[in-house]
Length: 151
Image (tube, rainbow, N blue to C red; front, side, top):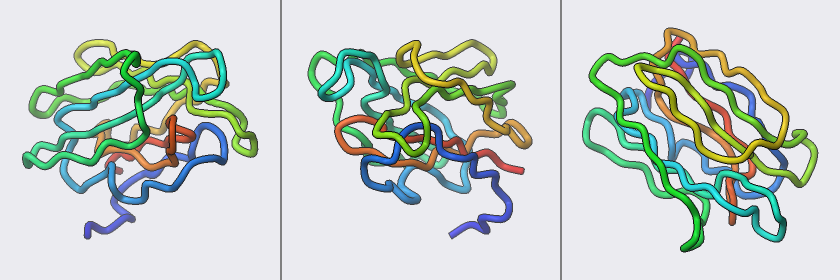
C-alpha cells in the first residue's frame, strides 16, 4: 500500500449515511478515467451522484460504488497522459445530515460535470493537480465524497 502521507485526502462533502468504501476508489497510480452516474436521490426528488467508478493508468479498475438505477445518467472523463486537474469542486449536504453528495465538477484539459445543482459547494485541494481517486461513503447514492490528490 502506498504511503498515505504522500497524498491529500480532502474532507468528505455530503451526509453521514452509506457505508465507507475505504481504499476502493483511490490508488498510488494516477486516474486514467472517472465514470459517474447521477439521477434522482433515493427516496427524494433532487439530483445527486448515484455511482462512481475509477480506472487507473496501470489498467486496474475500481468496483462500482453506489447503485445507479436504470434511468440514471452516465458520463465519463478520460485523462490524457500527464493531464492535470486545474480545479475541482464537490457539492453536497451538511456533513452531519442525512443528505448526499450532489455533484462533482472539475477542469483539466476540458471541463467535466456530473450531478445536480444543490448542496454547498466546496473547493478541493488539488495538491500537485494529479488525481488519484476518491474516498467516501455510499449505499443507494453517493452519500459523501472527497478527492485524493498527490501532494
